[in-house]
Structure formats: C-alpha cells, structure tokens
Image 1 (tube, rainbow, N blue to C red):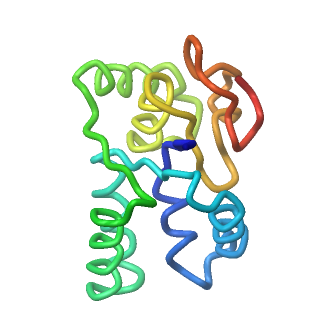
Image 2: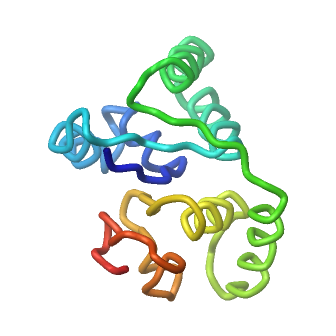
Length: 144
C-alpha cells in the first residue's frame, strides 16, 4: 500500500470536473487503484472543504467530507506538535515562495510521514530533493 500526503489542490482536482487538473488527478487515482491511500492532514481537510464549499456549494462539500472521512481511499492524520512547529519553520525558511501555511503543513507531514502530492507541484517545488531520512521516492517528482 502506498500513501501520499495529499493537499487541497489535489482533492479539489478530483472533485471539480471543470478543474484544469481533473482528468490528470482521476487518471492518477485510477492507475494506482486500491494500492494507493491519499492521506489528508487535519489542516488540509479544513482548507479543502472550505474551498469546495465556496466554489461548489454546501451539498458537494458535505459529500466530499463524508467521502474523505469514511472511504478506505483516504487516510486522515492529525499533525503533531513537532509537525506544526516544522510547518512554521518551513513557512519562514521559504518566505520567497508563494506557499500558504497549509502548503507548508503538507510538506512538514511529508518529511515525517509519507510523500506529498500536489497537482503540479510535489516536493520538488520545496527546493529540496529529499523528504526526510529514509523516505520513499516521491510519486510526483521522482526524487527521494
């Protein structure tokens, strides 16, 4: 079983058929079948559901929330205090990037838990090739 930390843009791309990355996201999930778990941090879940609600409405947001919370396709993790501290370090370290604290939280979780997937970004955009000691190859950019 492969696990990927999944950010809001990847979740949104799966949900909105009009999103520019929708076909790519759906194809990726279909290609990896049941061997793939999309892991969502607690902070990403808040951000993703807020985005879905603001763009697609309450009913769609409620269905997405239920799916993420009950489907075996998704895993939910609560960031540790260490990961939250790492989030703010990343946010400060990469101040020249256009990253939200949510993006930084995904990267912090990826460094300790699993590779990170973000439609069109991945760990390469973080300016570092490794995801932490002993981490697997990133499925998005192929770096370790």
